[in-house]
Image (cartoon, rainbow, N blue to C red; front, top):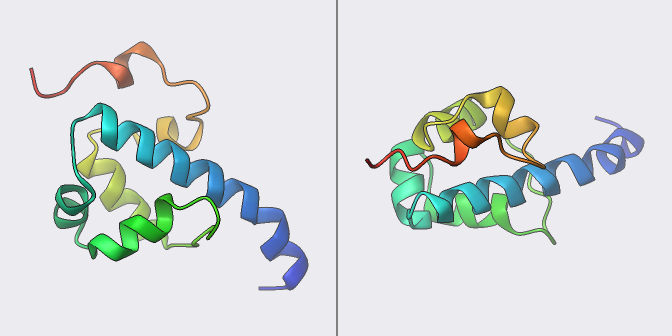
Length: 92
């Protein structure tokens, strides 16, 4: 991956990390709980959610996180504004 594309995608990874963090908190989940459900380490979730890091990750990890958060991956990608069906508490 070239440095130019790395820089271009940086903001996308930051935005996605913020969306993951926001939805995780809305679901009442800890980083540890999300990590366990997504089959990654807590430190990996922490890195994804940290805006200063812009941590890239694979589609497999992305799909695992989306499944763990009970959200359609497309909604997570376009998460600057979550639709009502995403915000609904899935614990009920």
